[in-house]
Length: 464
Image (tube, rainbow, N blue to C red):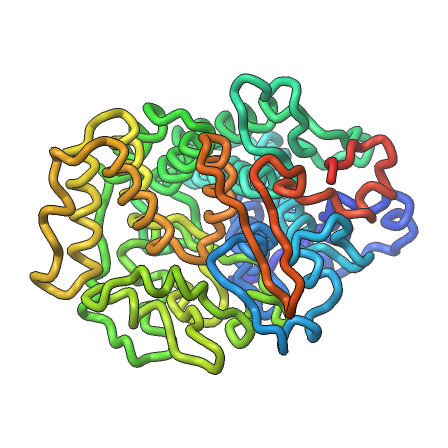
């Protein structure tokens, strides 16, 4: 498909200065979008909107996953990381070294593109024959914007607390493309209201099934993301209802017993993976701690997989110094950060358990794990509907961590579970030095990049 590059692409990042842009001479080869097809082409640029470009691209921030507890790096590798990546790994108070932060720039570029599309669509005269195509573009732009806002909020804003959300600071909510729009941070409550509003709008306009182009949003993906958002907020009734709506459209799972665990990349491409509802990837940093040649899976986490658990061989490979993750649904070395059926099943199972519906919770978990274990090897007593509620929830959360490894969700899960009293303290060991991140520490929120503040001196920085 022809690539469309619009006049404002050079200033898509939130931190760019108006003066710097105005000094540039427009390139005569740039195409200004005017038609519905032009706007759909912008949304179909999966290198930007889904982060599907080569090394150095991405749609979902990796900084949270880099700070999480599913992996470690060897002492011999740590000094080779750029200073900024070292700072992230040990949760240093001072994080940035002045270099570009893709985790901020790329999601806000998606927001900017989405806003361009929405403004452009508002100027079009749509006839009946174009309504379906218009709905797809309109719903997709709202989805992409919500998706980016949500993931930005998971790393640059505090965990959602319904009692304090109006007083807590969220992220900048850009809803237009004008340089005259004041850039300031919304409250946390406003941030989540905007995310939910965008997703509710997308649900009304997107097609029902995930379809064959999984880099395009769908109604099912929007339901899945709403379930994720409400789970993050601790609104379990709503999270369950949207999980129900998502799974009602399709609930297919891969049978891991049919995969070739000996392959370096054992999973099918996202486009043909029946679990993938929306495909995108995390920002990737080849020289960083989570790159495939540097990351080592937490040894206690790896040991928690039973021998009959097919994930033990499908997700991991033996390397010098331990085990390394190879189970990305991207079917390559990049990390999948999209929406998939297994996550939504686990969302619903957790909600069921929290709502006292233990039998239903265990049914969801059993359905998932029978596609993950060797045939006939599951301990059926473990899925009893008569388990105490607390025990059922503990099992589900354990399986959630093991199933959704390196999906960009663990940092959010740790924040919300600690807010409920889990008291998880993270630890890193580099030589003889131990670094810790305790519950309630302000370093659970990453700082706004320094260069963004230099262009926006009135913007509130996160406390470190």
